[in-house]
Length: 259
Image 1 (tube, one colour):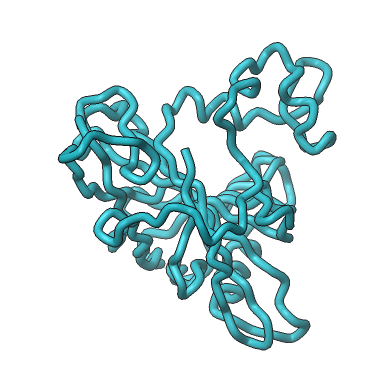
Image 2 (cartoon, one colour):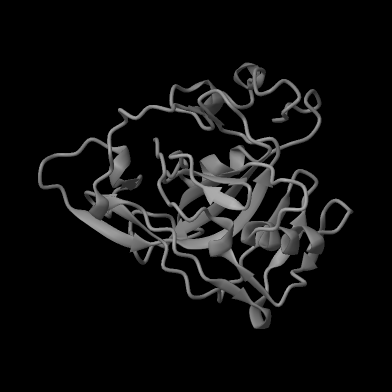
């Protein structure tokens, strides 16, 4: 799912866009977070804006027909997800007694959410057999009439940033995109792997604020970036006493999802 956090004149307005929420196998995800020298050996970079990815023989998964990220269409005719099946993005506050770890991995700034993080009432709806090896959220799959729908919790594992945005909306890129990586446990959906579970990624797009403008989202972002170290492959403890994840989302939780 890709939500949009837009700030002009102190207001935050969602642009009726949203994020790509999909269940993916952990092995597939690990292939996509490899960065470094493009030639020795071949790795993903953004030097060629992704145009070289399909030519890298080491990564045949990039030659498929269902890829991410995408250019999200501004299309009011898109199918609507029924209200009862919509994902819920209700995240809590990281408290000082159990703070997260801020990682500078040389590619991005990443916040590892502590294991005891609570409360978080984020959830997705899974369609059909929970024993399936590749469970799917309801809005991403054609299904038989009367197929079972099960709402299950998803726990945030980490969030990280891309600048510029990986997704486009109507051909337009944004200066910052945040990804909240969530996991659905094997306890909730038996078809998910034991660790880390099935992954669901929530993306949020940000626009630049006016100079001197202060918003709740700017305050929370500053807490993360102020805690990050300048040196690659180093970690730091989140220095703020609290971090409210809900303030990093737009007030309008309208979203777009794709498989």
